[in-house]
Length: 417
Ligand SMILES: *Cc1c(COP(=O)(O)O)cnc(C)c1O
Picture 1 (cartoon, helix red, strand yellow):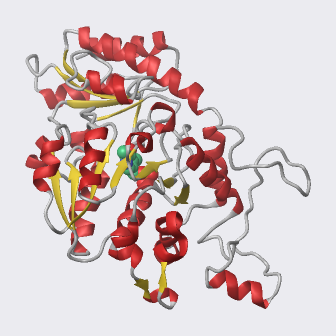
Picture 2 (cartoon, protein in one colour):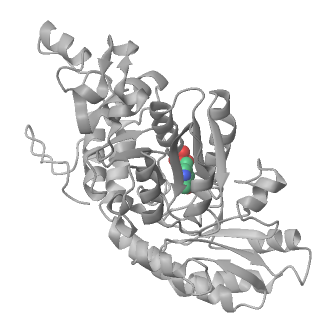
């Protein structure tokens, strides 16, 4: 969190990571310039492709995730988009969890459809569901480590074994866990994506994303990585870069061509967040666990979806994969017996004083949202049910405030219903 990927600046001795706010880099000579452009030499050309401040963030994330390398990009959406764009071709099929971040569901179901990529969504809980959805055209599996907002935890080991037996990569969005709570690569995941916007940055100040690669997957027979690339004079990424092939292709082709780069300033702010990640996550989790227990016991709350509660179907799995706690995001339903559930939800959110009503998670401050009218609003009723959301579902992202203050706030807002 504090040292990986950085040595103090050799020119002036700066201990903090300098912000290299530059678009481009002077070449030593014409030969070096040509080698850099041909990917024969590693170095910086232009900050759309790489940047020294961002490189520290990438190295640190790779180190925290026990990975071979990482590529940082503009946002979590760009991390997923870049990963799939690098791996897939028109006509391919993928299997994804039905309980994903709302924006991800839309990206997969609509934007990738335009690129002729077909997606089957499955209930992530049982590996058998994934296996049944695999077709001869399936190229990868995509899951979130902690489902949103159901709190579902997939059987990572089972999924990794399935992916391995079918020779396809397992992609895990680990935004809700961060590498402090879970390292999916240690359980067999191929590639991990993050919205660094959330707990990694940790202060609600910057949008960013990162793709982390185990370097373990054999891409030698995976067409998009192994075959000659027409945009690099027939370069074969797997033959040339081996374990780094996916990351090189992601950086040198997909990020280059989509332009979804991260600014050096945001990389710096995300590094500031990483420095205190473990301290913050311990507090986030402790507050969340206590609030989940408080809500579960409250007469106006119907059901709390948090895998740290024994009542959650994946309590045991959470202990296995997230032994330090299943994050700080939870969902619950306002008791529909008493009043119109949608109205009750509205009144509850409007009554809160400390929790901010906004579309984000993973801020130091506590946050609340009504997914049915916001993050998951674009979904059909059917998709909504598959995603585990009802009209009265409320989602909390528990922050770092004093626990007693948070409980006070929830208590007074529930009393007002
Ligand atoms: C927020 C989020 C994303 C998208 O990330 P952005 O940084 O907002 O683009 C993807 N997955 C999960 C689980 C998220 O919470």
